[in-house]
Length: 338
Image (cartoon, rainbow, N blue to C red):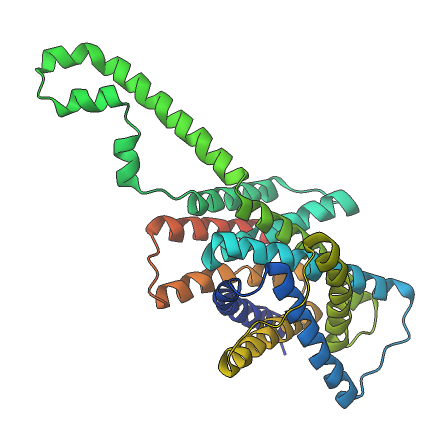
C-alpha cells in the first residue's frame, strides 16, 4: 500500500501530541527520569509478552544491527526522552512540541559530521527559519507592555505632559536614539533568555539524542531482518538498563510507588502504553515503509496537532504562536525537500 509509512508517521505525531498534554500533569507526581523509566519498563514487559505470544524469535543477524538498536535506545529513549520530559516540565506541552522541529536539522548535522554529506544553502535557510520560528514562540511578549516599558522614563514623562510642539522638537532625535538603544538592549536580553533557557537547552539536547537514535534505528532496520516489535523491544530494554544506574548515581532516586487511586493508576498505565508502545511502534513502521527524512518531517506535524489540541482545551494561542509554528514547520519542509 502506497503512503503507508506516511500514514503511520502522521498517526504517531497525532497520538504523541495528545500524550504530551497528559505527560505534563504526571510531572507533578514523578521526576522526568523516573517517569521515563516507568514507561520504558512497563512497555518492555508488555512487548515481551507479545513476543512470546506471537512466537517472534531473534534473527540470526551480525553484531552491527543489534549494536545500532542498543545505541539507538540508549541515546534516543534513555537520554533523549529524559531531556524531553525535563523540557516538558519547563516549557509546557505546546512549546516543547514546537521544539521537535529541531529534529530534522539535527539529523542533517549528524549526517554532515559523521557521514561527510554536505548541507545545501536551502538547508541552512531551513535551519534559520526553524530557529526564528522557535524564537518567536518561546520569547513571546505582550506588545502593549513592551510598547510602554521600552520607553525611557524621561521620554514617557515628556510625552505625558502637554508641552508645546516647539519645546519638544529639540528632544525628538535624542528620544529616538534612546528608544533604539533600549530596543537593542531588550533584543539582546531576549536572545540570551532564549539561548540559555533551561527548557530550550533540554529540548535541544532531546532532539539531538532522538535524531541520532532515529538514524541508527533506521540503519538497523534496513541492515537486518528485524521484526518491528522486536526492534522496539531491544531499544526499550537498552533504555531500561541505562536508566537504572542513571537513577541510582545521577539522581539518587529510589523507586517508590506513589499513592494513586485505581482510576489514576489505570490512566497512568494507559498513557504509558499508548505513548511508548504505540508511538514507538508506529515510528518503527514508518521507517520500514518510507525514508527516514520523510518520516521525520511528518512526525514534526506534532507541532500542528499540539496547537489544535491546545485550542480545543481552551488555551489562549496568539497569532504570534501560530506564525512562529508555521515558519518552523515550513523550515522543516525546506530542509527535507530542497
